[in-house]
Length: 219
Image 1 (cartoon, rainbow, N blue to C red):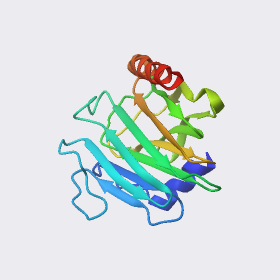
Image 2 (tube, rainbow, N blue to C red; image 1 turned 135 degrees about the horizontal axis):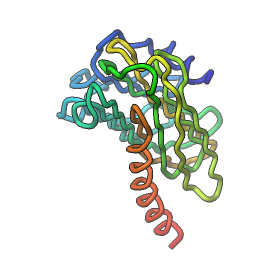
Image 3 (cartoon, one colour; image 1 turned 120 degrees about the horizontal axis):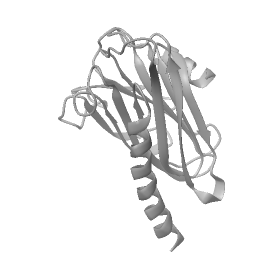
Image 4 (spheres, helix red, strand yellow; image 1 turned 60 degrees about the vertical axis):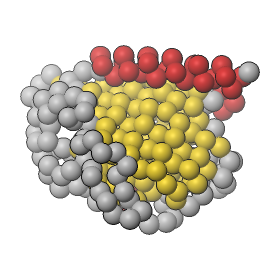
């Protein structure tokens, strides 16, 4: 929780109804902030679709990164929120090799009373992966994985949204990756509101792909 909130304070919460934004930080070098459609040098959105942001680049010891955030109108809608964060990140490792990916959007409206966030993640890591979902900086769901020699990880969870969502609320996905040694982490995370039915389905698809990759690695 501390990492997530500290990260949000570092990046700065987006303003209400701001454009979807993907940020990448290693805690040492200047944070890369990629807004939907950005053409800023070093923070170019490589995805031409609205509601989808892709960043390809390097930051510190993280020499290869291909990270993509997806939101409305590509998936979900303003009244049925869905967000997805896909990542492939390789580093030379070492003490303090930490990468934080933050994907934010707003403009969602969900009635209070029966809403919940369903969050799911699956992938392969040679380190530790933490996945959190937040609303206005408050942690709704949190999952941590340290697979060790098995490499694959995955899980799903739900969190309540007592007040629902209004258009000014900031919905955030945060993935934190740590590598103590050279390695790669890759995977996909998703959230949906008002329930986790869709994310559970997406997790199944993700884990099928992960299992196939694991089999290849074993061979």
